[in-house]
Image (cartoon, rainbow, N blue to C red):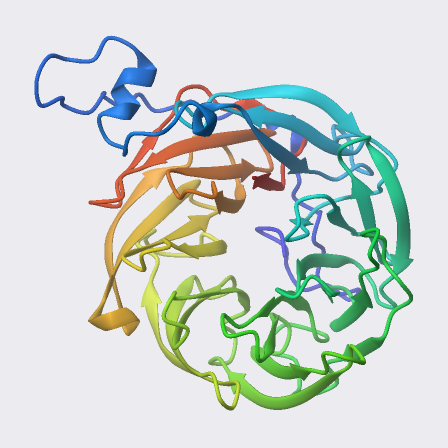
Length: 401
């Protein structure tokens, strides 16, 4: 759900506060890191002092895809295409892949050949596109309304999607070409009852557990995380457990610790995060006590939480506060310790993502229409802004490969 949206007779709006024309937020100047010897003279040299040595092939430009809304004023015309320098973080635009409506969230197939996007509209859909020749392979109905999140099952055989408007989750088979087949399942969250101020369920995320044994769906409307078992042959979902957040929390996004036994939950409505215990054998999630986002009184509408590949640090995007919170992960994943918050480098950071090597963090800033890039210090978890943000209309999702 977008920041500032309030419960209305018609439900919760996800786009009411897009504000695409708000302009780019001021970029905070960040000093270059101290060098052990002579001060580096270029941006590339400065970055190299804090990161492992890389081969020439590793330094070639990498693809970046940007999701947007196409049906709002100032929005994009499709999926933004770009590349980024994996050392400096500099982004270079490469046009737009058109033919997909409101592609607000993106995911890539494990083989790297097919990109999937939600079509976040009243009659929801999911689309498959082939970036190599910018060809849209087709769109399938989710059977629900306003899909806002999708993910590819680790086997590469199934596409999972979450419908915010209807509070439902869907499964589509993925064909050998990367195209999507007819939906194999649709589950609507009919219980428990909606949380305070909400008129119904709002599925906001669907993700597979690290062991691949279960699929978890986060429902903001009912303050619940549903655990399902996915039939690997039929593509059907069977619910095996439910975890209730406290009433009014509004859980939005879940991410797992690398150990597969802990996860972290970002609560959009009450401005908290929670450490969760996870049982791989049963799919059962146990949600811990709410913790501070470090953004002060009121709500900053937490959006997405990430954990580094080594499990040492976690980062939370705060849209209302235009900041990213840094946590130290302690007690083998069982505890988060708040360290600090840093400016997001843009207005309304809707989504964050790591580069594959974990050296960069990308923030898609919806209101300023920009993508900020940060260098991630693997030792301290410190974030350092990597130059000026990249302009992209109503940027709501950044997917670096």
